[in-house]
Image (cartoon, rainbow, N blue to C red):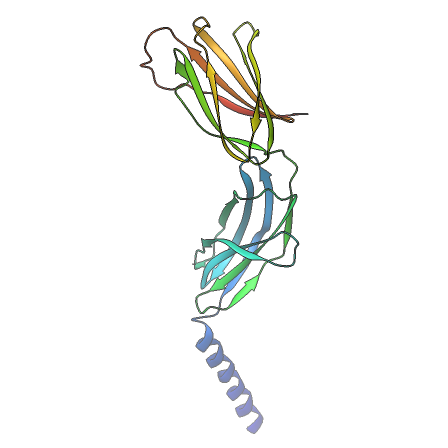
Length: 229
């Protein structure tokens, strides 16, 4: 009888302990672990959970050397869930050759756990980015603002619908915002194709030249090309 009593005492003690911490204990099971992929606008991180219990937030941490990490953003967690839940985070401020990422999952009582660390290798050129432009339907001047990640030189050319080059120029490029001004004043009406190039990286825009005052809405097509694609 004494042994049986002791067994029951231990059982109820374990149940009591589990019940006492169940309100704060956090458990996250990853269906798909943290992974990342480089895009033109930054590194896109993804992860998927299958189970969450009392999870509060995912803190995204980044490192350049894989040792010292810093918080670069947060994604609110589902909290309590037994279903598949997908998360995404875009790191737009990245120009380093390699970037290391990990998740710091924090629960409702402040305790935390870390995911595995991943590395995203920079392979795509991203030296320039178009920030803004004037109306792409114009009777004269077209302006485009370019954000440059490097100092150097930018080449730009304009072709007509017959694929003839009507403008071809170079301009010094400084780190930061640069403005490029193109005049189509002496060109006939029609569609023109502008190409901006820094090293092997290209940005393309389509411009329409009209002779009358511009009343039309912008009609712009833009795409980016890299050597070998």
